[in-house]
Image 1 (tube, rainbow, N blue to C red):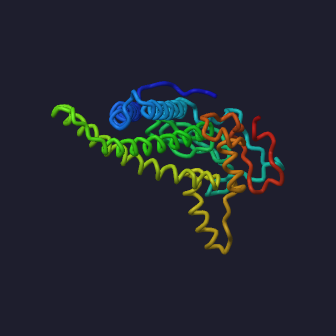
Image 2 (tube, rainbow, N blue to C red; image 1 turned 135 degrees about the vertical axis):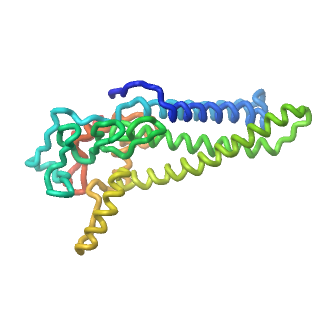
Image 3 (spheres, rainbow, N blue to C red; image 1 turned 90 degrees about the horizontal axis):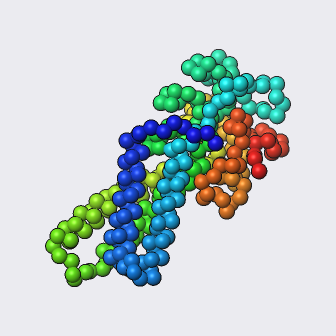
Length: 286
């Protein structure tokens, strides 16, 4: 997989600082106060949360640095290809989609990103929090990161609440003030993130079950309205069934769905559709 250029990004730095704050407050305050880090339950919870934090950082790093997918300069749509029944066209004129800014044709599901200043394969959206587009090659790791992040936030929130049930008699006034600050800030951060990331996770689960991107969802709303206006029924062409949709995005092996790998994806130039009579072997790499 290609890697994008490395440069400083304030949103990415903020995310890393928040991850670090949540980790240290959870392990050295919540777990230590509730169980003590020298006890077996404390060690077990610290190890579990550390593993979860490492998976968050690892998957987040891949989402940040992995190139979301570039359109090859040699790409040319083959309108006579009998195995490719779907050729996306412009809304006006009905011509094949062509990017005037990049000076090349756009494959199905590719869109031009105004921030990245190039076309991205199977573009979902541009995310400022990873300073990168979410596209063909990094969509799964972005999805997996959100799963781990939601799990970590909820886990930390449970530990926070549990640690509040413990009353320590040997804390001086200065330590008590410090702990109150940690608990207030942590509560605000964890509750906010749990809600925001939880909504984001539910949204992308919904999209994944229908094999849609965020862009395709909004385009589909308009297409559905136009189809109903004309007395027709609109169906998303890339929706091949909930389970098949998930395997195309997360991989054929259920046990590896939460692993931040994308070896199962194809070139991003062609995708299976509801019009395909048989699965396309070239689209899935072993």
